[in-house]
Length: 113
Length: 113
Image (cartoon, rainbow over all chains, first blue to last red; front, top):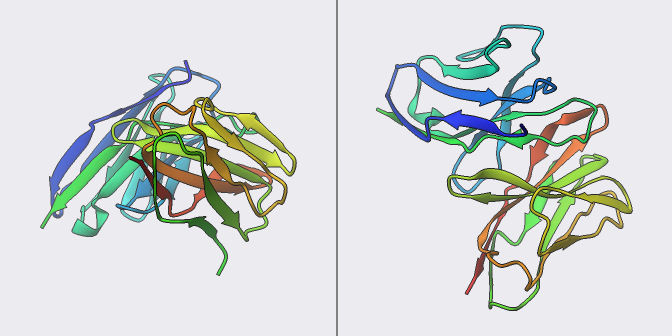
């Protein structure tokens, strides 16, 4: 119940295309869903996050879509650029609980020029 | 510059030796975390601390130990009891009231020979 399942494991997208990464969870107590971006040899950095009271959040080219009934959320990267090539992790947590983020297994995105 | 410092970036140790990884933050964050990252497995929580002189085990604490004597510092010791210590180790911190947003250091890659 504590798992967050992420797919695909890797993704290749052409420059200008849309990158889509999906995550699913079981624990309905989760109420915070962030996405982290990690470049090789670096620590992850918070990219965008959503709470279950909204179905979509957009920040620039990055959009989170959230489907509470299906217990799924996804990251969409519009107009993907080579600089977006990185590993993306979804995560989930219960706010105010143990402060523990449960991470997905990551998606390695390669955007080809 | 405010941030999280991890040292060293690369660390090599012989099997059977204990090794301590450093993590320092000047963000004035109360909470600090240690994660282990392995290919295809995402980030797994080793230990976390919400306040000085207190810490809790995460999901994979066996073979690891921590201390939290100062707010700024949260060192991780990888003991000889850890069966597969070769990995990328990440330290993170978070601020009161925003525990679900974690800020990561650059990581330490530990290789046990």
